Each structure stands twice: as structure tokens, then as C-alpha cells.
Length: 368
Image (cartoon, rainbow, N blue to C red; front, top):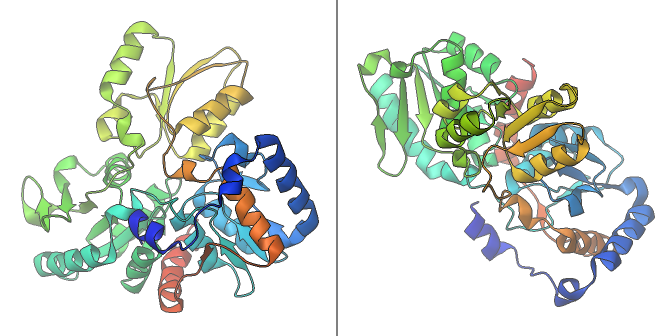
């Protein structure tokens, strides 16, 4: 379900009362409800969330980590997921029937996940199979819809994270001659390149034109990349790095592998969100860092590491717009609806989709 569809089907619009309430009053009410519900309530918060929301989270982490922690928490009846739609879907897939996953604002989607819908993917699979036969194994980044995870699971593939992508791509290429990597071309390209696969053995599938774009010989292709990307990480450029190298050569540059290949190549370090956080926290006092990832996280790292000089690699970077849909008013609304017995915005994945999606997730979890 894309962002527009979610907005149309949400059914509930934030009541006016929350729009005029003071921040102090909202915070007081959230604390009261958290105390009232106790262990019946669990609030996971993604690293990219606003500070006004993350302050109330029971745990912070990346998308899969939060879904797994939600699944481990069998006491919680209500899991109010402060992230985006695909993350809440994964939490629903992994949790029990007796637990309800709630997304405070149904408009909190992910533009990357929306770049691969199931109809496009099934069309692509049919055409690619006609080109390459039964030589392709599908992989999908966890930043994808439940329907795409289910497609991958049904076809023998697995999910990947930015932390384990190298291991999962290596496994997939030990199973089949080629992989189809959904939906982020940059993570797929950077991962394959780091494994020693040359760029000429990679191609890009354009879902809008149903076309495979490549150079060289068709039979030499190993990695078929879906033409998708993260709208945040694509905004870090080689020009950002060149300017920084000229003006502040002492800066260490660390970026997320959702950035373009040429940006990763010019950086000093690249890795998952957890990798970036650990690198900064363990860095020497007085060291200087330019970080190429989401702005809410960069600001948090600056606040939590006052002994280091930290900036965003792109000085004009904005926070992830869809992540920022989850704000304090929507969080309070979700919590008060639980307290009143009228749950808003529950996330429920159809059983058939969930069953196939869990196959893809489990194939990954068995190998990490």
C-alpha cells in the first residue's frame, strides 16, 4: 500500500483538539497513559524519529531490530510502532495474534518501499525468467512492503538488512547464478561491488518501462537491481564530499550504503545505521565527522557526543519527511485511543501474505 492509498484508507484524521494542545500538556498525558497501561503497552522508536517522539520510546533501533524486539515482548497487548508502514507490517508479521500493532499516522510510509509494488514485481519476474530462465533468486531489503517480502519468500528468496547484505548476497549467489535485488539499487550495487562483482555484471530493472538496462553481454549479468532508492540518502553527492575535503580535510566521512556508489567510494567509511552510531560513539574525543544519513539521527548524535565535531555531510539536508509524520500529537492520539478502547490505525497483514513473508524473513534470520 503506497502513501496515497494509506491516506485514503486511514479513515481517521487527527482531531482538532490535538492540534491546539500545548507540548507540555501532550507530554504529561503521554506519561500518564504509559504509567496507566504499564507492560500492556510497548513503544518501539526508529532511529530516524523526532526527538519529541523518541523520548517516549521503550527501545530505539533499526526497523528489523524493533520488529524482533516487539515479537519478543509477549506481555505487550499494544505495540505502538513509531516508524513507517513497512516496519509496522513486519512487527505484525512477527508478533502473535493477541497483539495489536498500531501506526500513529497511516501517512507514515516509505518512498523507497513504494518504488516496488507487487504488480510491477510480478511483471518483472515473468519477463526476467523469460530472459534468464530459472537462474535468479530474489532478495529484498527489509525496507519493502509485506507483499514484496511475500513474493520473495514464495520464490525461494530472503530479506536482507544493510548490516547483513554482504552475507545474504553471497548466500543467494551460492544458490542461483543471479539475483534480483529489490527495491534499493544503491544498497544492492554497493554490496555486490564490495563482494568483488564488477559493475559491468550488474543491470538495472526499470519497472516503469519494463526494461532491463545494462552494458556488455546479457549472459554475463549476475546482479539485477531494481530501480529504486532512498530519497534521503540520494541527496548526498560527490560535490558535498569534494567541498568538504577542500574546506575541512580533517573530517572523517561516514555514509550509509543507501547512498550512490560514487558517494560511498569517496567516503572513508560506510555502513548501516547501527554501524554509524557505533563508529561515532567509539570515536576519539575531539575527532571530526561528517555523516551521510538522516538528519534526526545526525542531530541526536551531535547532542549525545558533545566531545566530537559532528556535522551532516549535506548542510541542506532535511529529516525524512515520511518518518516525521509520526509526531507528538499523533502519538498521544494513538495512546488515548487505546485507553478509551477505540484503537486507531491498527496494522494487520493478510495471513497468506504474512505466511510467505515469514519465509523470506526466516531464511535471513537462520543465517545471521
